[in-house]
Length: 247
Ligand code: PGA
Image 1 (cartoon, helix red, strand yellow):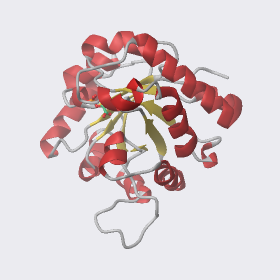
Image 2 (image 1 turned 60 degrees about the vertical axis):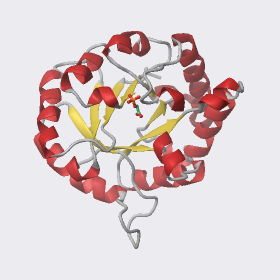
Image 3 (image 1 turned 90 degrees about the horizontal axis):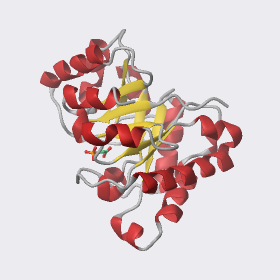
């Protein structure tokens, strides 16, 4: 089984307006022939224009969330089909800001993953422990439990990624040590192989949480790290490109 192709994905969260399309274009121009895949996940309202602006470039566009149903009376929500129709190829699901802020359980995340697959999107499924859980020595149990609960059997044979994002590292400037990251990534890998057999070895496991130009090389070269999910540092082309080129 070949090693996963690394993926660097930028999660713009609720940041960016049409003026930010210039930043996305600068990213697309700067990625050159980097060895991995690169994605930007802007607010959904920018996806269509960004996908058009980046057409023909190496950078693909993704969503930050999608509903578990394909259509219907869900005011304010967006379906996977709509994201794909707008030009998205991937979608982040189960981000801790959605798990904590919108009470998304593993069951909800798994239902969203199935909906994303129906729409032909590649899911990036996020997992990660809180600081309390880490302090209690519960990290591996929590994270592998989230992997089992959030990844439906329908993913077998489909492209997808898992992102390990310790909740306490997101937007805080704090990061786990390389040894801590490797311990969790190895546990996720073992769970993926348990769930999907040999195919579980080809799934990229991204690290996310305060990835920046100064720590990217060390994190990206850690064992079982197959890329990064980058929040704050993905908003500026210069910073994001410095992370991409650290691959
Ligand atoms: P951060 O966010 O890089 O700003 O810590 C990462 C994320 O939430 O995906």
